[in-house]
Image 1 (cartoon, helix red, strand yellow):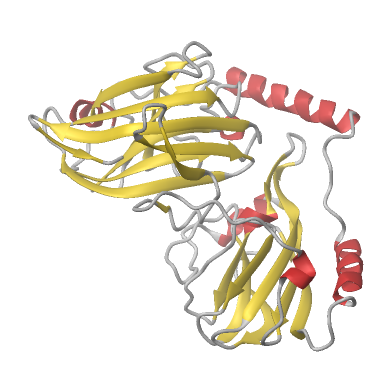
Image 2 (cartoon, rainbow, N blue to C red; image 1 turned 90 degrees about the horizontal axis):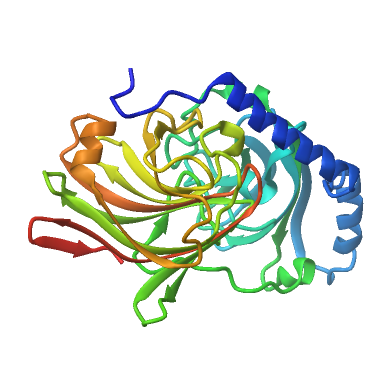
Length: 383
């Protein structure tokens, strides 16, 4: 039973209304020819074989084409062994669909993870072309991520492999192991530098890296973090241990320019949002966000199956009023935790920034500054 103040899941009629809206939008894109489709595996292989044929003689130590059906749980044997120091490039293309009717899918850049050997650690890139240097020797394995979740850094699943039967689609992959001295740019071309997060902040490991957050400055020169999400997801974290006692507060300033969806965010197919969150020592988190239309003060458990047991959402602002302005916020964490979670936590362990635009693939833009935790006369500056 949910603690007092936490609202029940949205009713069937409201969920159907959101599904209907998404279905109409998907149909509109289909009629306008805007859905787009990845190449078939055969076409992907044929096109990239032509590009491989243009490479300098001796550039390739090995290569292989694979198709990863979305229904295939981790892990997939590529048949390619690597040595420490080998340079490897993956070129990926495809979509894994949660719903074709609603046009909800995750891209290849988010879906395909790697592991060398049986123990890992697991890793992935942020783009459809990913070049890395092998840190150890062993067989290279690939994995579908969504709709699963990792239990540990060796690549064990925290979710049932049966979940993969609920999705469709798949990913075409070209794997290239380069000869020593060869350059990946001869295949994929030059690419800009990846967007790096601010120092002392890291992406949540089991969601993987992203290029959503970067350091910036406020107009008056204070340190800030800029966020831009579009068809991706990322949780940026910083360690911030602080006692959870009466009067413990979270303060921050933000300028939200654009929300990633115009729909109610409390259903699974519309759960795109921008937020700041705190994680407690019992594994629970409270996340404060700006809703497109839900009322200020609404509190609910996360609608995502893998998160509903650990995440609580609190709407602190709603609608278009205030978008584009720097606004200061304050929350009493001790009071909110007692009211909305009511568990045994005694300490805050991390502060998070969350951006999700995977489901409706809109643009979300905001900046954060002045993040601090305080109690009585003491405080720590998180940003």
